[in-house]
Length: 138
Length: 138
DNA sequence: CCCTCCCACTACGAATTGTAGTGGAAATTC
DNA sequence: GAATTTCCACTACAATTCGTAGTGGGAGGG
Image 1 (cartoon, each protein chain N blue to C red):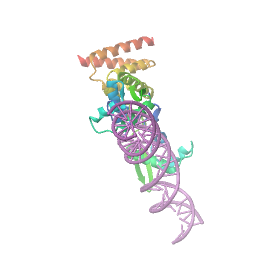
Image 2: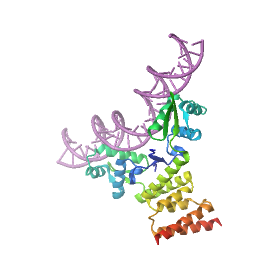
Image 3: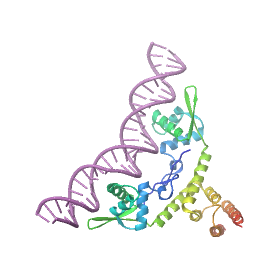
Image 4: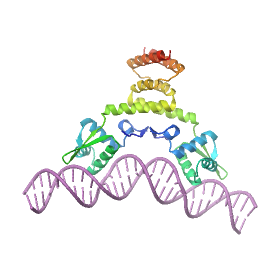
């Protein structure tokens, strides 16, 4: 799983992937294991896309450790290594740790500042976490 | 100020810039306003670097809105648009907001989990923030 | 008047991502 | 069994980003 960049100016999967990569991942996370043909046909519904283009990008995703490739007879099937939830969990965790390493506790203040619309339950949860952190310090 | 990517696998300014860009910014944040020559000579202390290489990269930083360029006679002087502190503040804020937008309150939990070594003062501050957030909700 | 210093313009290579052509091997069809 | 279709491997090219550097021009000092 080899994601290198987090893109400020994009949204969702496009923060981690190129646009075509993102569409492919979106589809595969929905359908789990699929052939290139199936992916290409699905993308084609939106706009024309060459089979080989899809294949190349999918093979690159395998090289990057995002997809797994399996042969069934002469058919190649591709499937995400992680679920979308697992992927997002891992990325948000990595980014969070990176941010803390880089900027220290100050980010947490930014977080809370930005979090005006947090719901009550989350705030309670945070409060408890803080309490337990305080205890650990004693 | 046009930073696009945050790099997982780098550290410090290298998360936002290429390595040469980062060295240049580091120097200019220390010295404020300097000529290309001054920058190049400073970098040269580490390893040989062509004057034109430095110039090209500095001009690109101007195009990106990171540096400002000013002519004094026929000499060009370059200076960061923001202080390093301002820059880091802005980036950490942007990233924080992006992360929250993207992943919701869950990141905060990650934060606190990762924050085992937070100091007492920070924890107090967080507690107060939480309290005021709670009040706002009433 | 020549030389040196500084800058503008231009170009190239590696890496990343999207694009697609060519051709080969297997399956299907006649 | 030969022809056609299906699917994949290999290869290549374009745009972008970043580091690199060559060529040449203009301004000032000796």
